[in-house]
Image (cartoon, rainbow, N blue to C red; front, side, top):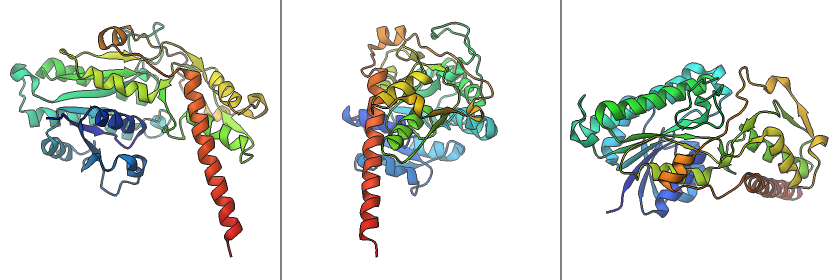
Length: 343
């Protein structure tokens, strides 16, 4: 019989790639969404015939218990979160409710449905749990590159909430014998990334500027450095973590760092433009507490999981620019057609 997977955050970037990957592996996939009328379902409309949607909310314990009980999954992937870091300073309580307490609620749902008590007996139940941790937990880093043993020093409410989710996942593993793991994923992008994230903001602006639809791109700190990879590669690591004999947490990243300035330069090179002619600095876009350098040491993931990234950073930026340029061209042509045929 095929395995059954329940994915929270299925309408997001990672959720959509993970759903595609699991379907290709022969899984039955369920996606947790807040209401059947969720407009973000359009993002995964291409998967509609292969995914079953079920109501649930990471802020509602009862709905999570009902969803887990109804699906009876072999694996639960908790990708649901408010993932735009700058927002966490404006809505820190909401971000904490979803990104921290939401993890606890899902773990509790699995514990209750599995019938686990405070002992480690029973083999931890049959449900395996993946928590989407984040490199933002490392924050003001104590060493570079960062590995599984690196001390956390989050520099945002988002990072602090993710650290709670990470530790409570480990606690349930140690307290109840639950197969529960966290993937400490470094920045991963794609053409499906939200427009508020810096790499997508750049690729969208480059496409608009190339077509003459935008004049300038405003950015904050061009010197901030990240370890960026392709989201489609990273969901393979998520799946591999739940296939191991023993549960463990892993750092996942490329091990190569690039600055925001590098991303800008490469993106503009894709359309044969000089970035210095179009980019301006807006101090209001700089974070209150910046995370300067994040770089993954994913030796354990590569060695124990057999995971390797397939898409490098230049290929990633080119992929995003080409996708946004194609979409912007279609929208422009459609607008021109409407104008030409309007009465």
